[in-house]
Image (tube, rainbow over all chains, first blue to last red; front, top):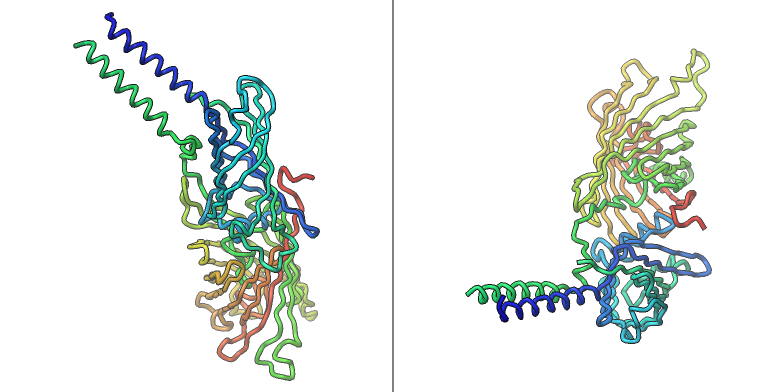
Length: 188
Length: 298
């Protein structure tokens, strides 16, 4: 084996290492959980979705959440029907997407187990309307996985979701959204 | 030469790998590659189109209470306040046993009739991975007339009974338009005259068109196949609106059928639209969640 071939092999193997390192920076899940809550004096409404798709790149803090609107489950079947048919119009806008960046990703030591507070900024798309949002949350490095959770509020009017007068006392204008995902390292 | 080839190969494979890795957006990693089967829902707003059954069942664990009310004939004059003095009523309860089966009971003032029914979903309209163009359900009901019978003859309990069997074939054509075809077979144990039919066939056609998100226009027609019944009675035709308010659905309608249970409105309708012999009526339905779904036990 001459020197050139050797050097090619070296370059190639180094590059491959870098590539796998780049992939090792990515974490994802297909069964994250998002819940939302509406509370008024007349009625308490909650819905859960356990099939949230999410991915995080810890090298730069980029993340994305994608959730199927039809996947939200309510206590009352009729509410679920109205949620899809009248409010979110899930046949026209089947998904909601949150795409953003963890701004303080550099403060997190992913090699050490522990819980870290994080700040995130991004674009949240619901009902085909995109708004800039910034949220506070927590990341926990545990057993090679990353557990992320956050809680924030959205205003229905920001996303062009109208509450008819007949149920104005039953649905809160501001919804609390809870996000809870366990991201696993991506294996390529 | 060998070196050159190796070099080219290495560069090529590397560039491919690099390209692959870096073109891969986080979004692509989410991988919702497979098209899922999506079932049509809310083909109609409630379990009835007007008088007749729609493809809808109460959801699993839900109890639906329906008050159906028809006033008297509109052409009965100012003395009867155009029918509003008079009323015919049916109270009904339907329960969703599971995602496929619902059972119901009812009591009508018309001939003091009790009824019991079930509705079973056989096919569900779907798109995506599995495509099914229509939803199909089987509906079956028994009507028990408790009206006092003629005491001068021997009466049997069975002669009070009538049976209705329907196939409900529905398609949600768009978000606004839904159509339903309802082949119907009715058997009456006892009929009034020797020439009256015990077995009656009818075909129902119904539909709804949503005018707004919460308001729809409904219509329904039951065609009686030729025979003594078709000669003696008229085909039932009804038109109305559905108003959905959240927990309730209000159905307001005009119909030429005074009673609201299957046997009577399909095979014993006498009102003629052309003479104004029609009835104003409404159904009010309210849903109660009896059994909460998993994860909502609190």
